[in-house]
Length: 215
Length: 220
Image 1: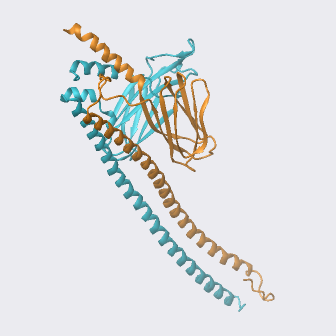
Image 2: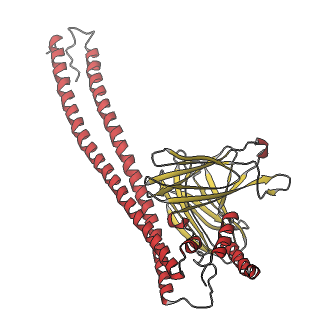
Image 3: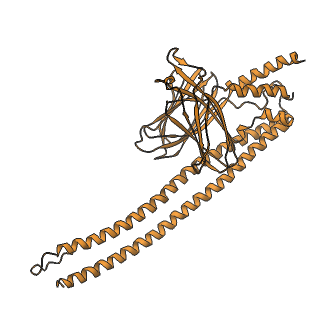
């Protein structure tokens, strides 16, 4: 009986490995220091539909340079100082694809960049699903709900990033207002006191003859 | 055909053992790479990484590097360290967030034999899964003995739960944003009033002081 299980098990193993090569979604948020460049690589098989989405979360003018190259070094996508973009392509060659984010134009601002690189489609829930038979109505309803919820989660992510951007600007503004208010009050006091002291020093030596009143 | 335990077991074994060719990047010897995950509370995060070392002799990346470790450090939104562990050349780390916010996952190599590096670079394959992506559905199906439809329903329930958590977190963040804005508003108001008052007081003081000064000097 166990021997009879072997071909089935082999099929499962094959599916497990196929799943690996089939689909991948990588979503990462990382910090890009000033004058730095960060590259990511991924091996993609020919014919796979891929999507690269990125958004700058915090830092400076919220922009970054992005560059996507295929296995032979041909530039598929190149944009300078972009805040947010989404790029879909179908892999025309097998090999290692590379995409880089560059903050080399910035002298002192660190940037936080979020990217989502989708390769292929998500693996099905059932690796041993028989593709020949059609799904029942319930199953296809479940599949469409799943897809709709995936896009809801995606929108939520982008909304969260925009909100993080807004919030970081607001907090920055708050600290700047406090800093500059205290600074200005201090400068005000210093200037008014030194004005009086300076004025007094003009009249300290002369006594009688000059009646010029400096004002 | 329902998934039976041995089938699921084999799949799980291979999914665990053979880390797929995920996204990878290069890291220097002493370089520390940090990734940020902004997540709601009670969310599970699973990270898997695999390292490869550049071999000068063969001119390629070695598949596995014994003796090379990676130090993983995870900080919660209050910059408190919740995980700080050394793993081997292949590793898997897990944590569950207890406070909502930005968690920071940092990786750096802790090579014991520095000679291994000698002008080389380390290739790190990394895969971080958050929330409902951490669920292993074949395993759940086998454990709870679910039919296909039940498994699909379970997946949808997990997704909806994640959406709910995210929306709760959104409400908490919006509250923080509102507090920051109101604080800025208050500060602008009070400091403007304070500065106007200081201006008037110093103006009056200046005039009084100068008047008495000139009177003392017999100029007026």
